[in-house]
Image 1 (cartoon, rainbow over the protein chains, first blue to last red):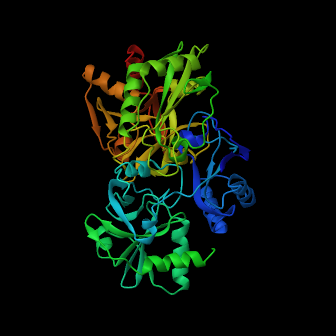
Image 2: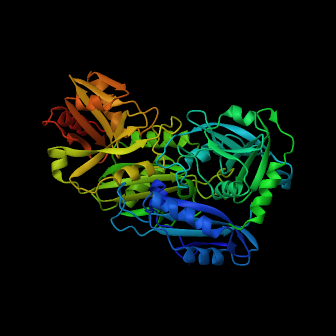
Image 3: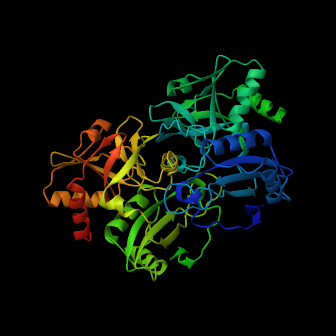
Length: 271
Length: 271
């Protein structure tokens, strides 16, 4: 368990880092098993794509993987986080001509969620905060996450496991730290994230497996009504796997068959 | 010239700081003269309001003012920056129950802009990036500034002094690091910033003085056409004062009378 800044143990960041000043960087949160990042090829591809989307040079996969291993030494299961920022800069929004990106690799223990979240399902909160529509940043896991913070501040009841976010036009987008799938009459639905939201690796994996398993999948703009009429609603990410939504705003669902099925998909595949 | 982290010289930030992880914080950039922050009462009021808007405890004005003085010791004129973050946090978007905000106070030399920017006026770029509409964060100078960074990356020509930002619906909003005023037939116009953009202290000062001077002022949604038809267009902030826009996308303006007049207003008032 530890934090590495550009490979150095207990490194501290200069306050001029543009990641702090502007949120000028991207990150990934992932699961580690026996010191190895799970689904690393896909996680790295996503990190690299996000770096590219904001014009950032991405560290090599070998380097990051080795650092995740070092930071997670001695931990059988853990959570890894990789942050890449544009590094130190002069005052002003213009990046330096030759930026020196900083990388921060940290590993900690898995979050201690009640086992019932996984086994029984969860209650979720419908957030009042609406996500701004910004196609230029949609899908990217960048460091500008104040919307998520403010949405998460809307409740304190620990029995509520997640918050559901709508966009400015009222379309269902995602969980605060998870992606959403709905099932209706055997068809998987997931929100289109081309205008806002973060497209997570677990969402991408489920979409790929559904295609392989010939389960019909629709990526579309979804409304709150679509959630209410869904046979099953599921939140996913790399840490939680898949949690079924059992209750939101008075609407309740019985335990469904799709959440364990999707969990089975994720457990059976290493990509 | 220096950087103080919670009062400590050359302090370094822990990578778990939520300012870095999520942009969970706010900041101010201001001018220092003989070690004293210019328009401090107003600057502090704005910082405090921004802290409040995201549920952050603001350090006291006495503390920040003293630290700006220490960080700027020996500098007759300088630029000060104050960042307040929600401090270190556990993994996840939920803030700690008892957050310990971090404050970073830094002072450097004034930016070396060509004197012609002030004396003659400037060429500006019309940014392709559109600002997302997010009323919940509008006006606040928070640390989620990736839009500004990406907009600033649209040009490298040093003869272009600033970029003009439109919002997602095409309304003129601000400069990347400045606020905008238009003058037409003796009436000052400035964009309404209730849906996106940053409401700067210099903008607020100019609005207050215009009211006092009985110059008619209109805060409204402005279109690109309003800029093209303006008699004079002016960008303002605490560091540059007021710069006249002389050229954008082929539209050129002669030197106007309002930019020096507004500069006179700013120089004559200490609030």
